[in-house]
Image (cartoon, rainbow over all chains, first blue to last red; front, side, top):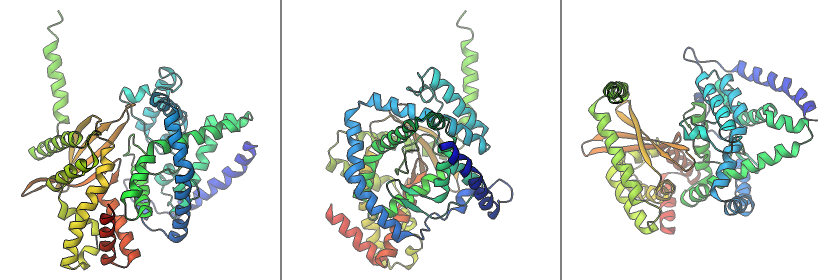
Length: 257
Length: 198
């Protein structure tokens, strides 16, 4: 089933990238500076976004935050840490592919090393031995690859339930989910639910780590929406510049981390 | 037998370390300043400190070690120029307290973790001191401190946590409030209301 969709989507998707990439003028020398292409605070759909943001916020407070807190109460810290490390290790192949697509050999070697070390010495990724021995994690995805290639982010969007996004990151997430070996194998063998569970747990894990920060920002800020928007764009720019190393996500973008 | 290689090894290690050391006394002093501040902050903002006391301590720390007038000017951005002297004065006063309330809790979540200064680089006439806080599980949070030398000693003008700037975040937030509430007077009214609500 999924392979059908895959074969249909990929050409259309590649055509879309090439069309968009062709429109953006690459900077002369020194490579493109994608963060300069993004209009950090232009928000043409602000009133619609604020409405969805309000809905999401109510949904988080009534459903997602209690779930995240229950998860934190139910599982002791070492178990949660192991699950977190395991889920991150599963992202390794996708991060590695994107490191390569961005022409970042040092990052790619780091990711490959982490994957090998954590999968073997880390018992299939349950222990992040690599981080403990000084090989830090870095996030990467196809949205960042598109940014590196000079594709414009498109407008700021608040997606129902998932939160802050932009079209470039959303397209990237679709590509990542098709390219991910774990999800691909699961869907090929009628175990699509495994991929779904993985992404839901990853989302809960991310939220459980950020729920306190989010509530605190909401409580102390004058304009919660504008603060989250600023954090989203700054964080994305830092990820595109590969300056984040290994950091908590300020906003629940989705279960990618 | 074992003794002999020690001295050359020490020399080699020393030689390797020297180029990594930041150049200039300013970078050294700025690093020492941040190292001292970081250790002090972890001590005074620790998890066991009651909220009221934490606020008072963070307020004192912010007044002493941050370049508040410079940050306030940056945060208002283009609106600084059109603000009246009274508005600037009032904004500066409210802004300080707003930051203290907002960030004492946000930074408080890091207290208790080991703090380490990793190095320094020059950015224009500011020194950027890089530091790290290592969380349980071995993950490092990168914190960059923008430090400027003033007549009153070293002052912080911005803090980046994981690539996110405190000053830029506040500038973006305040710009939104100003646009939506119809001017600087609106921002000042909202700040006052927020602080009164506690």
